[in-house]
Image (tube, rainbow, N blue to C red; front, side, top):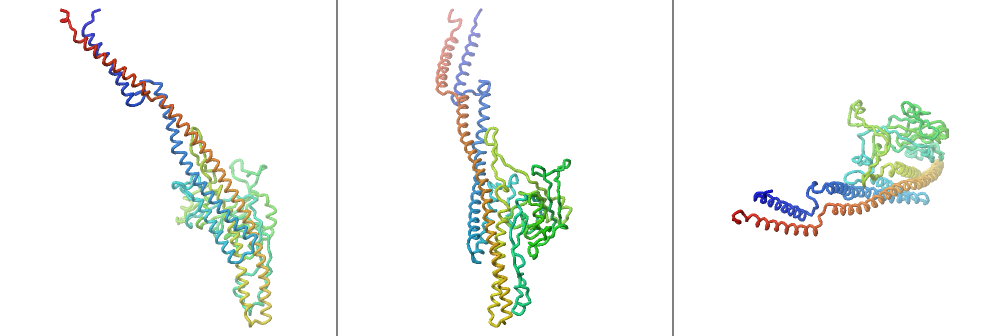
Length: 517
């Protein structure tokens, strides 16, 4: 076979170019630090690199974003719960003081003010937020747990489920003097005033979650039918609850607490008190329903600052009262259902962790209602003290006749009896407050313990992710990083080969046919 100069030149150029490409590849590997520059260099390494980078990217998302965000949320939640627990402890201290000590009027008034302030502070903790999101309101993170300002522009139709264990047995002083009788009392008409015979009456009541209900609003009391397991008996077709008894305004006495008979019902009577949010049961009704469950429907259109918002706790329908057309109000009304709203973060591969505590699991209406009972008992005791002071001022008159003095003394004696009874009721209210605060503290402590346990799990996950992050980074480096020592050695070798090819080419090209002639 004849080898021409053209063939030798082409082969020479091809070999020089191959050596140059080899040097270029090694130079790029050294400069970039990467074992391959494109997938075709080594498809297996390229595929493995893509998988490792995807895993590392997910790890970084969990470790650097999701977990820190979840921890911050849970830190805010736990801080609010711990503060709430401390505030409940303070209320417990006041209740213990009131239940065991004889308090002057000024002392118990001070306690009442402190209790109200502590109650408001507890509920305001329910509005704790993280990055503008309320942490105790489930999915409704833009809606606070409690009203931040008085609210009169929304009317709620609330349906509240109440267990028989919530039937409260308390005491009220009845048949005492009316304040109007004492206000109009004079030495001249003292003998015409019938001397009251105060007595303590046992009261069976269902205490709703709210007071100051809508005057003249719709109200219903239903006794759901229960199945063998104690659950609600549902219609097999519609799925609706079945009821054994149903009552409305026509079958209940609707009044307020100023009614002299508000806390003295007939044996079969049901009294609904709109101002206090109480359903007073007659003795027979209590005996019949002591193991029942209740569904109570009522309306409320006025809320105070720091009142818990109904939509976070109850099935309810909210109407916008700024709309003047009733049809439009009904059309645009918002219906809320009771459902679990658990916020979960993905904190690892196929691992989700619930980070929130729902308000109804930590902040109960019963706490505020227990404080309200204590404050009301203090106000009742103070009212009797004021009546006594009014009678004492009349008795200080030196111009009284013996008949007038006797009449006033009889009134004074009756008021003394009423004072003893109201103070006994007040101490019992403080005692009930102790039990209520124990229950509330247990509730908050359980929520705190639960969030603490989840936080610890999150910390363990974070530690594991930190280790995995290092491991995946190391694997990625091993897979795609160039070995610089080998690269330098190979580059020097390639450079030697390249220079040798240039020298060989120079010698081949300069020879021609004339050199042999």
